[in-house]
Image 1: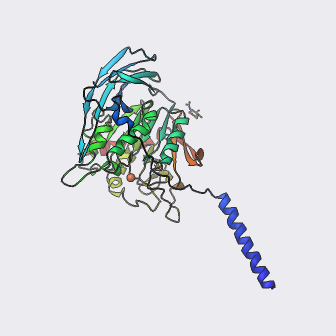
Image 2: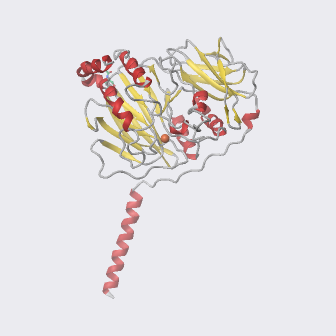
Image 3: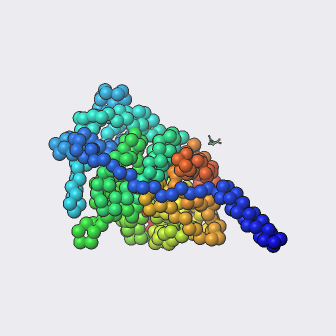
Length: 437
Ligand SMILES: *[C@@H]1O[C@H](CO)[C@@H](O)[C@H](O)[C@H]1NC(C)=O
Ligand SMILES: [Fe+2]
């Protein structure tokens, strides 16, 4: 009898302990369903799926889709609603994919534009009117960052939270629509992101879900390249899969995990030329984005970034890249400053932020013990905000979608490599790499 009482007590304590730890722990929400979209927009002749992206200094590319083939690639714009003092003509394209035929996809570059200014614009001489803000030309600047978006209820809540923050530009390290061959899902993704993507520039690079190649029938990235044209020509690149741009004292490298990246590749050659032109007095910060992480202690996608890391890490290190942002792994992780597999005060901080909310769900399993370089890791949906305050200080925060509230879960001040003296020390190494044939 006494024994029975004792074991009951133990059981009770165990249940209590479980209850307490469960309460103290963050309980991860479940995967959410893919959103359903009515197909109204495809019947209307008005512009839809509007999004904007930087296109060289003081210029913006306006992209939209229209079902009416005779509609012009014309953007009218100005700083007062309904008063269009300027206009630009652009280009259009379309594509077929098995039984799918896309609408007319327009890309029109407008400018020169004032920095940090609200513009009103319309597309194809037709309403509705859209409103956008150009980025500042000086610090501070705030980037919203979210990768692996997809189009689920969680995507919607991530976008909601981004909408609530004050930011100047969206950076997306790959995996946009998760259309995965169903081309209509590119259209529904375009509709889903339009409210945000038509009002702030969205700078994206490709992930594996953009590829959609079919042996003997389709090369990769056809839909992605047609719809999400980025300023690769403006940055001297020959491919939409990698490019760079400057904004407010930041040089941003948008690299391609799914373009050739060995030392003899076009991408590598272009990257060397691009880095040779970086002037740290004009752009004290250098960021790099690509899809597949190099520093990842999640069990998902282990080692997939190895070959790109082998060829490009020495180059990014010598060039003094401050922060690397990646996706692919559906979880969040932030590293110490690292290089060559271990902490190094002159290497970049690597951040994996592939937790935008897609239908594949979260990557929960981690390698234990945690590697020495891993500072914070958690499998939750969310988004990041990077506020670059001035040439020396930036504030990074990660906001998880906890019960639909943006809970700030990880935050850190990052000081630039310029301010730590690393850049000066590396000058010789960088020259050597850049000069190599
Ligand atoms: C840069 O910003 C940080 C953080 O706000 C501040 O502490 C520092 O004094 C600033 N530096 C300069 C040179 O303004
Ligand atoms: Fe991916």
